[in-house]
Image 1 (cartoon, rainbow, N blue to C red):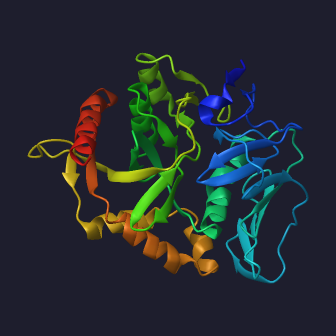
Image 2: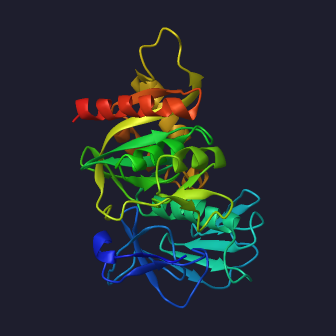
Length: 329
């Protein structure tokens, strides 16, 4: 199945074809708006297409060394040198190298990247590039509410993707699954779309298929399903309106609902723990800058989201979040 998305609905100039395998490289150069960056790639990516004359970040195929010289840090599967080059190796079939925050080189003997390769590319490696481009990356999902957006943050498996997918079925576009990119403009936190294709766990996919025809087999995680992004999303950043922190705690019997306001100190601890590529930022001396940006994000109202017992209770949780976003407008 080929999914053809008119690029003018994404503010681009060329039609974009999502092929049978979105991981498969081809000879065409693909251009996207990812985290407020103009990204040029040798392979299709699950991102918002946009045409531009000059790229901020180029992803290309090429030779990558087995090890870096003049290393300042070695984490086993990653290395960093004095020039702040990042090497990712021994954790997936491909090797990847980020240079100067503006070039990602991928070396693979395969015709296409496998799921693990792809996850490392659009996760740790792109996040490290964002750090070098003065962008604050979080491990979080983002949902658009008009000109504002909400961040869904929590540990892996907390249900961020499922909640974002349910919002999508109700007409609230997803802006990013697992990677949230925050830029600070004055005293406001602004978020631009990253990778709005949501990967779903099997039980969530079964539940959502009963409610929406937007659920389809994933093109880049073959054993999962995904929910199609809103073709009207566009690349523009939105102001962060609220942060919803998904916890593993079930709602106490005494609680009136699934949401509870969270104090600044506790909210900051969640934010700081979920900064993406923090190991890289610490090694290259960028953690203080990310800390200051995190303080700005922490001014945004934050709420604890209690875990629902099953997926059938999610609609009530969503209603509470929508009402909360309306009250903060």
